[in-house]
Image (cartoon, rainbow, N blue to C red; front, side, top):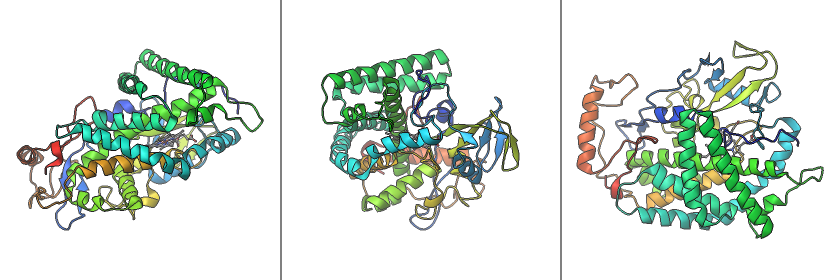
Length: 441
Ligand code: HEM
């Protein structure tokens, strides 16, 4: 496995490549469908991609082919011989690799996420989540920064065997990375990437000097199949992809999930009693409809066609997971909550040879943090606000089916929420969101 070894300024496994857009895109609204319990719906995202709509393939301003059609996203992701993942001149293990080198890296690294690893980590995750939720008390909190990012950093540190003292430094880095990515300033992104590499190199040096029985030490002991040990640049890249991507994605996913729980008290009642697999399926489905993980890139290695659109060798192709996950050709009602029916087509964790290896760990982390939040939330829906008889839904047009105006609906809803002491609106930073204090509906 040999690849160019240069520090990658776009830290992470491509998770944040469109993070600048994420802040605008993830503006959520509470909407409830009338009728039976379980009929709660999302109102949908305010704005979809800048450049593409669900079910479409377009070129954006910089000439990249943006694929939002579910079938086309799957086809591209599952055809690594036509669409290479070597999109960066920097070393990215395993995400920037193709073919045999990629397969070898996955064989080496995937065992770090197997069932036994995740089970062994679960008691620590539960303790961490319970501590953080308890510390939040009854005060309003920011679901991303106060809960998600803190939980992600502590969970990662527990998994990798990193010292708790690193927490503030890592949290500061997550925040700086987010704003640097959003700024689009390459100087700033390079600087935060260098800082992250320095943190990781420091940790690796310490582990080499004093090995202990943890994931980081085991990583240091890995060898490629030809017997060569992993070089430092490769180790740094692996850890960067594990941590930088994970910290942000878990933090944002937590924000989406907490918002949804706040907005859907009836489902909350069901989820409190759900077993692990049922809760995991619900979480996957919530993330499908409001996927905070925007996109990944590929580069075409030859002239080809995607669903009738000509693509030239060298073209960058953007797989827009978020659009694909709401493609009406596959999800007839993208807002409907159907964990079982939608599971097979759910692309939150990608598909094809680059499908997320961290899924088992991410799934368990999210299950644990949701359980901790649910434990502090009332399960009864008896006092939950009921959907208005007039306002069935707030579609993107801004008008309800009944003609009830969105502004009036919004004013009414704000009054209702104020009266009930909860903020049902959640935005990704920089706009601060407040999760409901004490969860009183
Ligand atoms: C909810 C959290 C997460 C989401 C939504 C997510 C999503 C994804 C997606 C969509 C891909 C496919 C990328 C592509 O096809 O180019 C991916 C790949 C990857 N993910 Fe995750 N991920 C999450 C958590 C994690 C965690 C916890 C880790 C590790 C600790 C991780 C490590 C990776 C790596 C290394 C890759 C690249 C795999 C390859 O290229 O072979 N992810 N992830």
